[in-house]
Every structure is written in C-alpha cells, then in structure tokens.
Image (cartoon, rainbow, N blue to C red; front, side):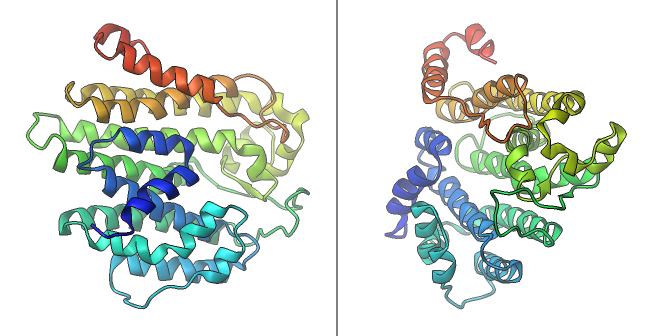
Amino acid sequence: MASAQPELLNDLLRATSRSFYLTLRVLPGAIRPQIGLAYLLARTTDSIADTEIVPIEQRLSALQELRERILGPNPAKLNFGELARHQASAAEKLLLEKVEDGLAALRSFTSDDQKLVRSVLDTITSGQGLDLKRFARVNPKDTSTAPQKIIALQTEAELDDYTYRVAGCVGEFWTKMCRAHVFPKAKLDDAFLLANGVRFGKGLQLVNILRDLPADLHKGRCYLPSEKLREIGLTPEMLLQPANEPKLRPLYNRYLGLAEAHLSAGWNYTNSLPWRNVRVRLACAWPILIGTKTIRRLRLGNVLDPRRRIKVPRSEVRGIIFRSVLFYPLAARWRKLL
C-alpha cells in the first residue's frame, strides 16, 4: 500500500466526515482501504464542484482533469493549489493538496479493486458534472441573500437519476467489494443485493436533499422537481418563503416516505447479509438508523425555515451505536431497531 494511505484513511477521513468515519472504522480490514479511498476521492471531486467562488468553467475543467487521472488515461500531475486556497474548511483544503497521494494509493490496489473504485467514481463524477452544468446560470456572489432565479430539476426521473449517480451507485460498489473480499462464497441473491444496495444509497441521498432544501434554495438550486411543484401551485422561488411550507408539506412528506422506503430496502439488504459478518452489517445499519432519525425530525417543524438545521445529536448517534451492538446477538430485538 502507498505510504500516504494511513494518513489519508485516518486523519482526512476523521476531519471530512464524522458519520462515515464511524462506519469506516468498523468495516473489515479487507475492504476498509478501498471504500475509504473511494470516499476521499469522491469528497475531493465534490470539493472542486462546490467551490462557488471559482467560475464554473474552471471547476468543470478541474473536475474533468481529476476524473481523467482517476480513470487512468491522463498521466499529467495535478495541482489544485488555487482551488485549495479558496476552501473554508482545512480538511477540504488538505484533500485538494493531497490529491496525488490519493491517486498513488489507488494504484496500489489490485487491478480488480482499481476497476471497482474507478467505476463508482466515474459515475459519481458524471453526476457532479451534470449538476454543475444544470445550475451553471446560478452563481450567487453573496449566498446570504436569496437569488432572484432558482433553477430546479424538471422531473422525478431527473431526481432519481441524480440520486443514483451520486449515491445509488455506491450501493453497487459496496456490494461488489464485499462480495469479492468479505463473503465471496456465501449463497446470496446477488440481484436482490444490487437492487436494494442502490435503493439504500438513493435513500441516504434523498434524506440529504430534503434536509438541505432551504440552504440549496438560497444557492439558487432546487432538487424538488418543478413538475411536481406546479401541480400544487408552487414555484421554486415561492419556497424561499417559509409561510408556503403548509402548501409544500404534503409533497414533501411524500418524498420523506420515499426516502423511508428506500432506507427500509437498505435494512432488508443489511439483514440479508451473512449473520457472521458483524462489522459489515453494523456499518450498514448505522447510516440507515441515523437517516430514519433524521426523517422523523424532518416531519416536524417548518422545513423551509433557513434558520433550522436538522442534525441528529451526537448523543443519539452514540445511543444508536450502543443499541445496535447490544442487541446484535438477539435477532428479534436487532430487527426491531428500525
């Protein structure tokens, strides 16, 4: 393994993601480096896409350069120093500065593992690039004030495609990596696992979209399809007014129900994995249980209020982890955690 890998998989992961770092720590060592590095490279591409102070054309170019390096054909070394200087987060800055270390770590994997990592990052970056182009006309200089024009996804098919590209594909990647290294000989329904792994990822992303709705609106972006908003007499711009929340609430609750159904499919996925693979099952269970807690909070209060930031407290996260470990030997109690 590349010498930079311990730093990448520990310090950077701990700094960039509180919840995923917990998941990574519990994963079996046979898949921890591959999944951890794929996450870090995806966060790097996400940092590029989200650096709003930099013109979109420059971000698209940088994203394409990194994508080509990940996929292999471009050997030219990357220098994202200018992008790094614009990062408010020290962790995001370091991710961009250490991008060559991440690429070197990728090349240290077996050819099969490299193929899986490259495939999922190919799909993720296609979603990020599409997102940048879709919202290209929105680049508010001052995000503290609402933009005059909000660009929205047009259809539910676009929403489904987006959640697949940036998260559903991760369920496929996770499943294939586990199948190769953790339970290669177990008799499992692979079609069931892949389909529900995709839904698992989509559910987590949909929770994020619904939770971040007010913040995205103030950036001029709306992931709720305009076709569905029109059906209830709303426009994306009208969602900037918290007073319109009661009118939005039935549609919003329908999407919460869809997210909940996807996470339920993720729970079925988790419980179909071999019982002896405790670490993988726990790593799957935690984001599902945290996600459902988030959904419960989103069912209450005004979801258009930008002052409201929904987040499951650390104490509740610790409680989820404790109960999942405590009840794991008790199959009936474990299944009732959701």
